[in-house]
Image (cartoon, rainbow, N blue to C red; front, top):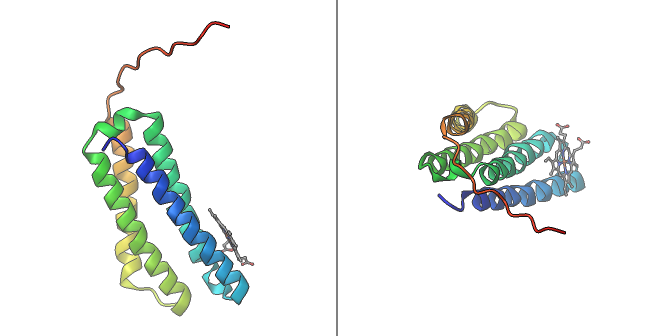
Amino acid sequence: MRNIDRLYVATGFGWLIFSAGFGTWLGASGHFNFAQSHAHIGLLGFVASVLFGVIHRAWPELRERVLSSVQFAVYEIGTITLLTGKIMVDATGEPNLFLMVGAPIVILGALLFLWLFLASPATKRAPEMVPAE
Ligand code: HEM
């Protein structure tokens, strides 16, 4: 997918807004038992998604592969599932199915990105023209 870099960065900023709103709520209401969920939303959602988007921008050959769309779907679905489970763990103290299913999907998403990165042949880029001063 050609614009997957923008899609990833935009998704990451969606996670940032959610994480920041969640952090504001938990701090204001004193629900500090949700602090780890808030941190996971920021790190798995915002930081990792924006990083994937920036890597797609820096290595454009990755975007040409169909696997890039599959990896995006796997990673983001896994993150939504895992974070749902994490919020439930912080609320109840009990493990749950969302966490157990989401965790391996997130790991699979990370492995797919590593595969995409290592197995995509580098394309030749045209030399940049720099205007003389
Ligand atoms: C408006 C933005 C944010 C607000 C209001 C906010 C608020 C908070 C609050 C109230 C806590 C709990 C502090 C405590 O336990 O005493 C916290 C913890 C934390 N936040 Fe945020 N936060 C914001 C953004 C972020 C972002 C963007 C990230 C990561 C990318 C982040 C990562 C963390 C981490 C790692 C912790 C520690 C969690 C723990 O102790 O288990 N925060 N934040």
